[in-house]
Amino acid sequence: MEKLLLIDDEADVQYSFRRIFDASDIELHTASSGEEGIRLISVLKPDLVLSDIRMAGLNGLETLRRIRQLDPQLPVILMTAYGTTQTAIEAMKLGAYDYLLKPFDVPRLKQLVANALKAARDTRQTVAMRPQLEQQDYELGVIGRSAPMQEVFKLIGQLAASDATALITGESGTGKELVARSIFQNSRRAKEPFMAINCAAIPENLLESELFGHEKGAFTGATAQRPGRFEQCHRGTLFLDEIGDMPPATQTKILRVLQSGTFERVGGNTTLEVDVRIIAATNKPLEEAVARKEFREDLFYRLNVVRVHMPPLRERQGDIRLLVDFFLRKIGGAGAGSKSIGEKTLAVLEAYHWPGNVRELENVLRRAVVVVKGSAILESDLPPEILQSVQASRTPHTAPASAASALQASTTQNSSTPLAPAPSVASLEAAALTALASNLDPAITGDIRPLVLQLFRWARLQSGIKVLPAVERELVIEALKETQGNQVRAAKLLGITRATLRKRVDKFGIRRELSVS
Image (cartoon, rainbow, N blue to C red; front, side):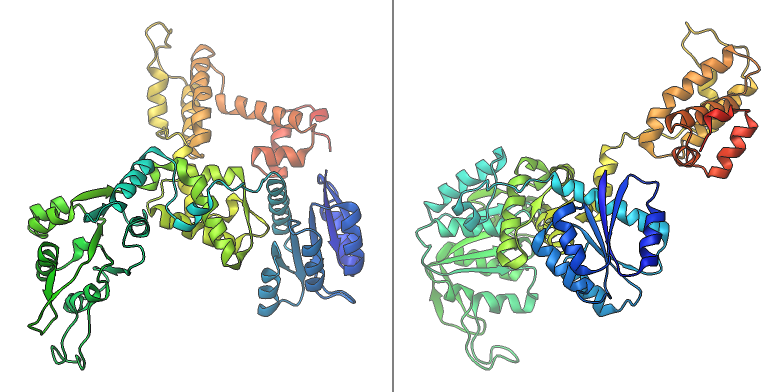
């Protein structure tokens, strides 16, 4: 039985909690002050604490600070009848699981307590991830042990040993710039400048000046001579990201630099010579752009000396645990504190398709570190769209059966099965039952359909039997047996009210000994 500790100096609140949780599987303990609550925590080892904020002596916020020192993982829900914006903000900053206003909405209170206890159970089962990477892996940031990533690492090593131009391809968010930096850091130019420029982020009329510089008076606003990235990167490495978005005029000048190592500033006549290694990247299929005459073919072949393709994260899901380890350490190093992650949470991350790739994974973990209510990241800390997507992918998709299609199914059987000459009233009722099942969750419907089809066969053999009342009666009886006659729990199990259950008990003449309490 799980233990709940209530810290509140009002006797009425303590009495209300005893009534609310009297019939539950929760062992309730109470304390009338923050000081008493702190003492009881060490003795009782509760699974959840609910504390009022305004109390004599140690108030709720200070009590929460003390609890965090005793047990950082213990969930604490703060309560108050005097809610203010600042109090709510301060409570969540201190690590409260949630913040509740008095007077209570009892169903919401019960659900909140149930959620907090589940989070506590999941947290206890969570083990902090052991370091899975070498220190140099954390420093470089290019993470992976999957076969596609091993091919990437081999190419990085080969490129680092030469000055060859490289083209890095792959979807957005796969880490193309990290690969470019890794090539640079392992090359003979590692002590020289490395500069990155996003060709898609700079307006067309400014990109040429950004790359090649300009002379004084070259255009309106050019009040002084300015060297471009090529001059600044002499003897170093220039990373041209999203080169597929580069305008045609600039493509021509880039081609000239690659061919001869020379260029002129915008508005200038002096030819400058540079020694710059170019690494380009794109998330667009450049071959298609060449075919559409949107990208110069000769420039494409100049860039595509060695191609490094970054696989999308969905094709290297075996690397997700390594990436989670890397990002949690990276985020924790920035002051967020170390966080562990549950095995179920990892399973969700591994099942997701990651359209935003590694960048999306990092952002999801950063969000989780912000919203997590303890030291362990749980499934509930992930964005709802990820949970919904994974749930949908795990759910067998069964086409919903309408009453008409169910009726057709009831009259169409294997030739070895005896058929009734015409569908009976029972068959029509069974069809209606199938239509009802089709409105349920697809996973539930998939389990119910075989039972419904069995009912069709039974209805054809037993003329005069009404399927729906018969099934309903048996469901009520079994629900009461399952709950030892507890009508409240039986009604909840059936998804109906207690009053409706009583009507069904009377309607079907179910023996009273089955419906006690």
